[in-house]
Image 1 (spheres, helix red, strand yellow):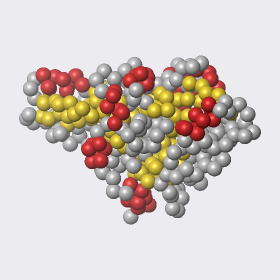
Image 2 (cartoon, helix red, strand yellow):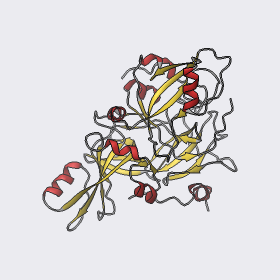
Image 3 (cartoon, helix red, strand yellow):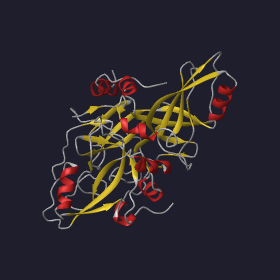
Image 4 (cartoon, helix red, strand yellow):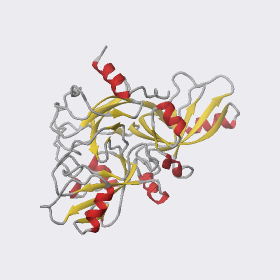
Length: 367
């Protein structure tokens, strides 16, 4: 048995199988000069603490001795889609529907349902399609209407199936009576990681939170897997960074620009991530303590979409580890912290990031 096969069985715990610009504001920049990349297969610690909660997780570790950065890795199974005849590749992490979440090993995120009609793209899956039928999607990164949020439609052929690769072909088959399409009422979070115009970049240095990207290895469309950096966050989660709704941030963070994700805030479908720009040095996005989410994955209030809030200690000398949003707000209300929607450079403008949580694990950061 391969090491990966063993870790998958150990870490997944029986979860279900998968279904067929401008510059970044200075406060978020991170170093990481490009160097020639060597193929890496991270070595997991002997006894990693943590539990995968996404069924498409193939392998993970909370830390690794293979690089300097204070982050681990997580490898996902890739899924193939098609947009206007072109292949795209994506990962699935969250579902608004509990039954689908339990069946397919996704994180139950009921607040995604708020983003239904007019605020999500279209995702078609085929109940009796051909063996090579991909998901058919309505958009991809590089378009103004892209977000990783999808309304799920289910399609069934009345007669002999054939492979469809575009929304136009689906609509024509439906119009001709060949295909029956029903809306499931389900919304999923599924980040596109490789598309017709590009793919998420790899960080060749693996020293910084941001560096040159959030991938440790490029999308492998032969093995159908992809490996991300895995970051620590309070309370008790490990997360990835896949998308952001503000163009300068997407460029500087080296993740997909998802302009339509900005709709999630006004719709009430976002949580908050509380990020520290000074204080105790650590593995957080700005080089200080880990961020603090307002809820934990799997709770009723959970959303993988986070409005970015930045905090600065007015006096760094008494800075301490803050582990919950209530502790952050208590320090703010006691005038120990300054609060900045977004970052100080965005001048009061928040932005939304897609930070799915594939792993639950005890926090190890002590300050």
